[in-house]
Length: 180
Image (cartoon, rainbow, N blue to C red; front, side):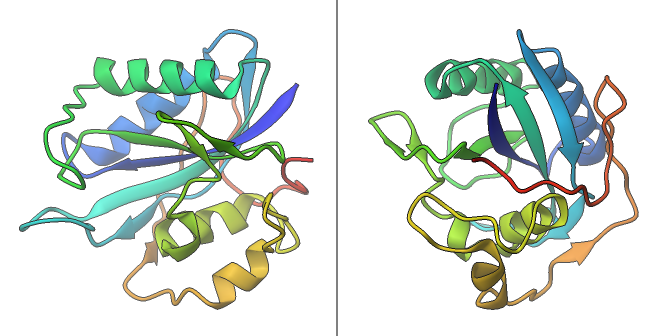
């Protein structure tokens, strides 16, 4: 089984419900299981115009799906939950991004792993740290703890909202070393 970290974000249509439904749908993917889910974090929207705040989380998935098959499955979940791809960085019901997939680096027309902007996004790094370890190494050799230390918390707020996958995987820090 491969291990993938997936970022979840929503700022439309009951964001907490959107994240919960997405986690449950991801857990139902063929030959896949959600192992751990971070707490939900509230962040300011990145993008054009006035937008509501986002709720963000990160989950750890064990899967036999290839990175491209996983991307396709995640995009199907986004579409099923009303995602429209009209405006880059616009408000959305659901945004699912593959952050890391084992220690693989992928650079194709449709998929880049590690996620190209994850190193500068506190709403990705802090939830990722919550369910992994500071020593988690990215494929380029960067260490998660170092990235978090260089990325200010800013207005990011950890909420009291808990997410749970259909299999009972829930929030909290696990002894996970991340993708090997």
